[in-house]
Length: 177
Image (cartoon, rainbow, N blue to C red; front, side):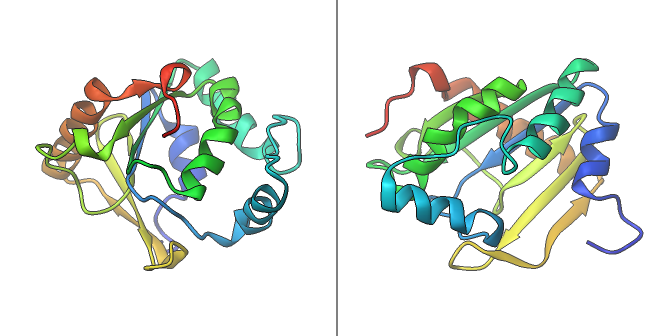
């Protein structure tokens, strides 16, 4: 993002009532989780300790937001049977929930008639959309994020997220296929 735009952490820290995240890829290849993913693939064990060095910054950020009254929701649109990466994500979602996130999963076959954005995104307070840009192999595409504050775009993305949320299965009920 350009230097004059707020960072993701700035946006989360300044959120007043909501922060929602829509994820639609079946695999990500971002460098900051590559070692953890490789370890999980090798051993089947996922770091799910909210106090670990890997998770602590995220848990602190989300916990602070939730403590000040921000509702944090994450919806994942996934193909079934799921990819190894989605299995890995599912194995770590207990930490997202521990931090205060509400998480739901929507099988892609149940999203065919929904109009969804072309990229994953965060929406803060229903007014700011932060699109995440990835390369074909799932790593961050430079600059990685695109901030949009036009009311029509924020509204369109919020409607899309809400449509997914309404159909999606809560994490505690979603079984990996």
